[in-house]
Image (tube, rainbow, N blue to C red; front, side, top):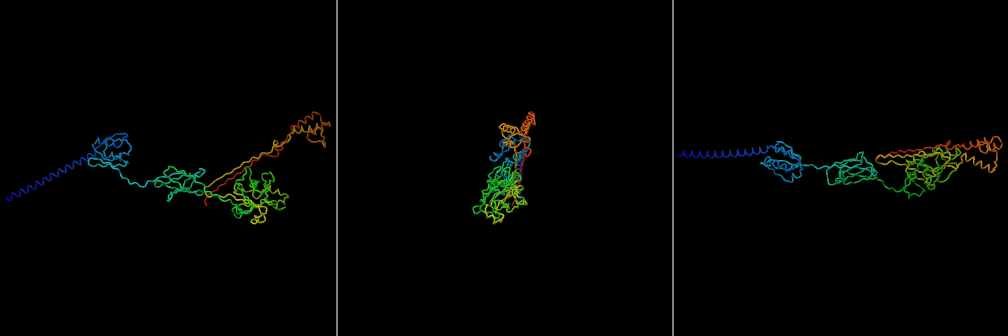
Length: 463
């Protein structure tokens, strides 16, 4: 009995083990079948030839060929533009990866379903390029202008064309600061413009009117002396090459007298009249604080004519009028406190132009003057025929001559006819010759002249 019970217990245990083994085999078979099915589904090949299709039409075509379902959010695929697909016998996932490459969509296969998810890209700060051009008020490009983003140290300088390009982190608005020597600084707000056009204004200041006395510059209202000031640009006269000639009639109380019509002659200038008989009566010329000595090495008394020295030139003859900024005339006796007794005739203080800080500026001034020679047409003079007619009228009026006429004149020929020295035919022949005898002495003695002046100035630089 005992032996029979042990056999039954062993049989039950074996049956339990067998049932467990059968269950495990079945589960393993089901799992292998499912994995095989997933592998087969992923490796399915499709052939697609579509033009101008959207994502939904493309996925519908793949589903019809493979039976694979797709899961996605509509907002993920609505932003993707239409596209063309040309594929032959391509694996599903490979084709999907190619189509959605660069579109921010990733495909995942899960239990017979392909899920479309959005790729989370880690983007850095977006950059933007700001471009523009800087010019002055005369529409000339400004090279070397400093362009800074306000509140930062990010900046560039404009090139030779006045253009600039600045890269920075994109913001809704930026403020750019433009600065240049000799120009007013300017702030410009950038709100996304493709090209900025910036115009800088000259940084000029209106100064109070001042006068230059040679040793100081003072306000006009603080000066008690008799001083007159003019600007060179206000007295420029075309065809006149000397500043002293341009001053004629410009300064009250100052006389400018032309001594000769020769091109090299300079006028006489009298500010306080004639203070001496034999001495020098000319005023003192001062250029930028330096007294100019007379170029003529002798005085008027040396050559017995006070006007002779002006035919050679004066102290200011070598100064280019285009280089002069202002002219100040000291007319009273207070000038002697500065320059001594030589200032008794007055002082003319000249201030020349100075270079300005900024970009180089080249200026040219040219002048061409044509002086034509005199002509008899400009004067009421008789020609030979009129002179013979006048003489004939005098004789017909029984006018008496104070002496016997001689020479090649109508009166002399008529006297020869009356004294029977020549015949009537010879008389008429000589008269006809006299009527044709015209000598243009202006043509023989004078000629037309051309005067041209040229001035080229270059200014600029840094302090």
